[in-house]
Image (cartoon, rainbow, N blue to C red; front, side, top):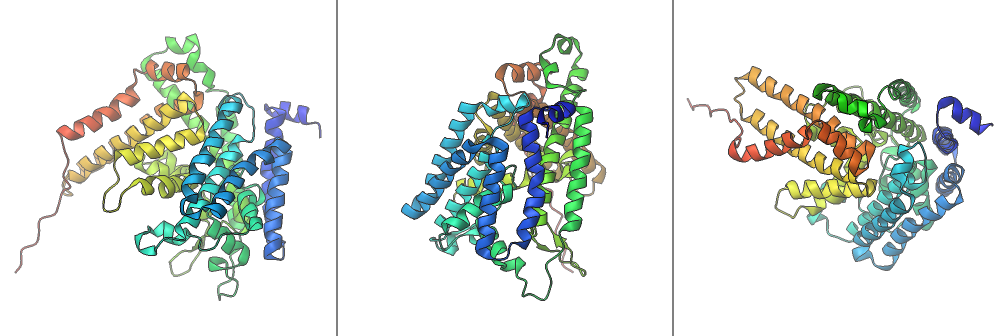
Length: 462
């Protein structure tokens, strides 16, 4: 194929077109995994297909990069099990940060380029979770959280199982992140994939088609909006001439536009995981059970765009990475018998920022996110302090929280998109840092106006 003319016709670079073709190819490649006959065959196919797609997308060097965190994780499990999780966490992140700095991938992505750093990001989370779960496997269940009990590994996976898990059919391109235990049960036909059960395995085709159609709609909307709201506008003289409301509305639309690119990417990866069968996560509990495909779901589009609270955003955006951060960072920083606080939230957001890359825009976005969530919690506590009898006032507070979330989220997202310190501060400063001042003001005001949940009066005994 004439890659140059194809790339030019859709307005992307040859490297990005090559990646997109391989990325979409993960759907038929994952489908073929269904017909691979044996457990060993599935592991070999998963590892080989993932490595081959990486080679076609990024070149031979990408697989050499992937070998580094994979080797760190497997060696730490083999050599020093009691601390293999923490060793893999810090060494894996250290290598990822080094690649971020060397390739300056954020600048490349912003300018329409592509490299293997994005895939390395997903792979790093996989090897860390595998090591931590193997570490948890030697601990007593009594002191473990539910997620640790569910995902702990008693035995060390074999090398071919490990490679298949890490590179499975190109799922490391954009996720979703999943657990080693789930991967092993899927390849072995155990757990919810047990074909000996009375209930047959569900057909993945309807859910796959839905995900593909969703991807097509998201890409069409993104291609329509992106020429109208370019990120370069933030540093153009015409932007500085606009009034406050027009600047703020432009920031909203720029954030809204950028999200549709991610919706497209995650919809394709969702289709790939669903059609392989790995995306199956059980059945609904109603009278006529229907299959669930939550393991493959990485975003709830309406959940993001209509979120009533900023607290809901991590639950519906980049869902599997948010789940990973909750299980492997947030919960593990909370001491037994104590509640999580702002420190755990800020630390989790900082890890997320470092994972994305060492850009000031990322750092400012995730600090902003921590403030945004904390401010939303204040509004929610005030809402809960209102008597249930005052339903209208409660609904007004719900609407205020919704508006707060929409405005602060899109303001904060500018840093994630433009990345540089100058552009981020220029954009934030152009609207007088209102998206930073409001959350901080709410947090401070919560100490002056504390909220106590409204409790119904106890009924008198007759």
